[in-house]
Image 1: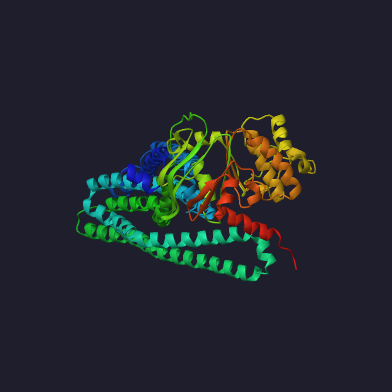
Image 2: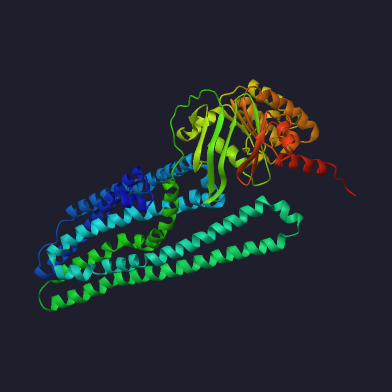
Length: 580
């Protein structure tokens, strides 16, 4: 019952399976204890009926009071254990699941995130886990416990009268058969609702990220109208989904409750035929009042369990995606980076074709070329942020596809044009470059990256929070913090992607001095769009249409009058442009 298929179906961890078993066990105990209360009432009524019909004396009230007290104590203790098993343990499961998903995402190759947007992943970690939490805590333990306890009670009732047992319980399998028969309709509706919810999240996130552009182009009204349409569509699909599942749930509840009528009719017929007495019918009527109770909550939420398959599938899709794995040791002989007939594709669209070049240790190798030629892709492949589809990339003779990415990246410092900062202080954002670095080391790196000039103006200096992704800083200031991180890390391989693009002329000159100190003696791979940035490079690799068009020193490439020469001339002409 609780095997691997069950675990996958409801996206449970191993601990989650154990928690569900505990919840089901205590639900069975609670249901049997509650049914024992009905048994006490039956015995009391039997005593009174005996007094009325046979003139026997009333039974002593002491055993009755003792039985009621024992029932109350057992009921309290078992309900407490059931609560802990179905709610308390599940809350820990939710925490473990979110941490597990986050850990899995941390180890996935970067290419995965190109297929899933941020709102979609956020909806999985928050919305989908929330939905599954409700299923784990409110449905699974209760439902499977109800199955087991009902089977036990049914077996006991058959000993009394199989005809009344069938009349009492026939509605349970029919009701659940109806619900489970509708699961495909519920799942399809849930999938449409989830897609609509993700579109709403996408629209809200997009509006917040691009609010300046929306206002600058006077598109507020048009954009809000589009967002309203997405919200209306989400509301419509939600109502349709809940209406559809609600019809099946209510129909199942009515069918199950018909068991009361069939029990009364069957019992009355058997009494008239002198096949049973009234007290046996009374016993079954007592049982009916309690045997359906365990299913009440499950029926109300079983539709949620059915549609939860969409959420579980989305979570399992993350778990099923292969992580970037490798050895925990990385001992290269030097740090030359060798691209050997490398090919790479985004979703079957090949963007690099048979790329081969070497970036030598102690030299600056520049990657240049038109937009979309594959420069940034090469830099990310060199750090195994993505995995290549053909060929190999070697660092110091070691194939990087065999090394765990986290181990590999210890030897890399990266400064990309798109800087990512955290909602923390300046000090802690720079300290990310080297865990455990002292404040003095952080300040030294910041000074070398020319950060002190703007840090002094901040209210709390290095202890000033800079907002989400450095929202309180300018683009140039954010770039300098990124450079300070790289300086602090002091890794043997440095990847630069237009590292000074956001700086003004004065600060660019100062930071270039800091970069010169950072780059000394290291393997440097520079991505550049401005040709003057690579004039002092030891080697230039020119990419065009995902292939190496030419390579050599700046002087050699200028003499060949090829693509590099053409790009230099175009930039010289554009530099002479002025407002007329």
